[in-house]
Image 1 (cartoon, rainbow, N blue to C red):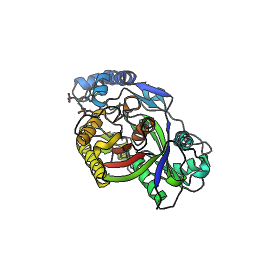
Image 2: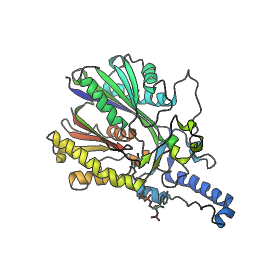
Image 3: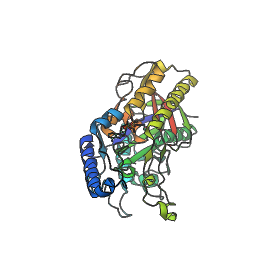
Image 4: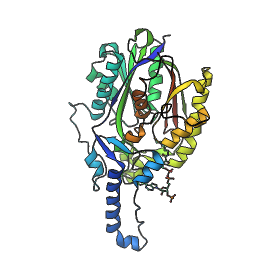
Length: 373
Ligand SMILES: CC(C)(COP(=O)(O)OP(=O)(O)OC[C@H]1O[C@@H](n2cnc3c(N)ncnc32)[C@H](O)[C@@H]1OP(=O)(O)O)[C@@H](O)C(=O)NCCC(=O)NCCS
């Protein structure tokens, strides 16, 4: 058995960002057009009028102020309301590969490693753009990594589940170092015509180098103290898109083939589960929650994160203890907690404890206890 560290992290942030005001303007233009086109039917009670969205509501309900996106124009066009990401030939890198490679290169650089030091690539994310070949194998080839690659999907918890998978392989001596990469184009599965959720998601990619401790040389090392995962089935976050859709024509193009959630129920169910899992995980490792210097939490909703840390600490957390990136990134699914980790780790002193925790559809929850080298 080998000791395991995270020795480098990387982040790819798309060039364009959409503010709440821009998003709401596009949504409300769509609402005005819909209501005008359906005025007679609305008047006759046959069609329900749509209601406007509000930037003030979005920020108050979620903490989100803006989001980075792979295509701004397509999303903001009221006639389209979805990103336009043109098909690429099979000879070009796929878009998920391109994002993943950019994040991976930064993670390798921070880890002080090259592709020759890596034995495999795990792509862990919510939405894979094709069935096969695996995106991970494409990234493996693009980086020039020898070894193996596979894709896995545990929705918003994909990265922590991927880190546990990498940790186990490295602990067992099956690999010296693995890359866990989370490319997320969440805007492509978001229904921008749904007032309840049109503001939720953004796009980004992260990468983490998980490595055998005795081989690691970087200044950015964190011991992986322990990992713990939990899943409980729920339909409260669901997306019915899949390869069987074409076999049931009656359901093609209906809203359930995109992201759908019961946001309030998710909030209510998930907060206590996360606090319980992280608290138990720390106890099992004979660690006090009061000694945790940083919580890098999944970035879906600011109040949710406040509540979770309050349940754990018995008091409000400072922004240093529970850093926020969802204000400018929105929910980037599995990438979110890793973005927080990537951006808010260098100031921690040697020996400082931190917890990386994700939560989301499934339900799925991951907890990774880390100690700064
Ligand atoms: C999605 C979320 C931000 C919504 O916030 P909320 O406070 O639960 O809001 P609700 O959906 O209950 O709506 C509250 C009110 O705002 C209104 N509202 C909803 N969307 C609105 C919008 N875009 N603009 C203005 N008002 C809106 C609703 O109609 C409702 O009005 P009412 O009280 O008159 O009925 C929040 O539930 C959330 O983030 N939940 C957790 C989600 C999560 O973690 N998911 C994981 C995904 S991976």
